Length: 292
Image (tube, rainbow, N blue to C red):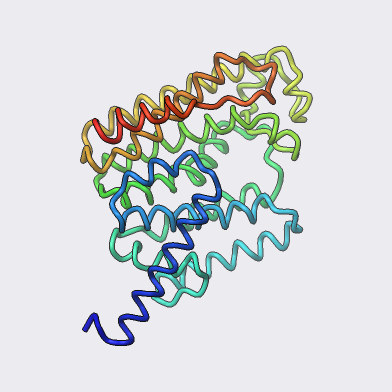
C-alpha cells in the first residue's frame, strides 16, 4: 500500500533526490533549464537527473586530476550504470535516474556512450581531430544525450532519434565555436584537421590556430555544418509527437540564435561573449514551447 511506512519513506527519498537534481540544474545556469521547465513533473525530473549525470562525468573530464584518476572515476561510473540497470544504484544521481530509466525506457548504451565521449577528453587534450573523430565525439557527448532526452520528452520513435542525432551535433558544433578561446586556454582545439588544411592552416597548437588569418573561413564552414544539422533536426521534428518535441524545439531555436550571433560577431574577438537576450528567449519559448 502507498501509505505504508516503507512506501512513504521511498516517496520521500524520491522527492528529496528530485529536489537535489533540480537544484543542481538551476545552480548550473544552463540555457536548457527553461526548456526543461516546459515538461510535466516526472519528465522534468528525468531531465534534471540526465543533466546531473552529464555534469558529473563532464566535471571528471574537465577536472584537475591525473589522467589515471579520471579514467578510474569514469570506469566507476560505468560500474554505477551497471548497478543502475541492476536496480541497485549507489550514487545519488544514479538513484535519481532509477525511476526515469524504468518509466521512460532510457537505454544503457546511451549512458555508456556519454561516458565514452568524456573519456575522449580525459584521455588526452583533443587537438585538431579528424572529421571522423569529431563526429564520433559529437555523437557521444551530444547526440547520445539527445537520445536520452527525447525519451524523457515522451517520444521513443525512430524520428525522435533522428532529432537527437542532428540536434545533438548542431548544439555541440555551436558550443565548439562559442568556446574556442576557453578551450584553447586548456590546450584543446576541436576544429577538424581536414578543414584547417583546406584553408591553409598547418598548425594544430590552439593559440596558433586561433591567431591564423584563415580561422574565420574554418569557423564559417563549421557554422554551415551546424545549420545543416539544425535544419535536419527541424525536419525530423515534423514527424514526431509535437508536444513531446517542444523542449527540443526551444533548445534548437535558442542555440541557433547563438550561432547567428557568433557569425555576426566574427572570429577575431573570441572572448567577447554572445548571449541571447532574455526577451528573445522568452519569445522563443512562447513560439516553440507554448504556442508551437
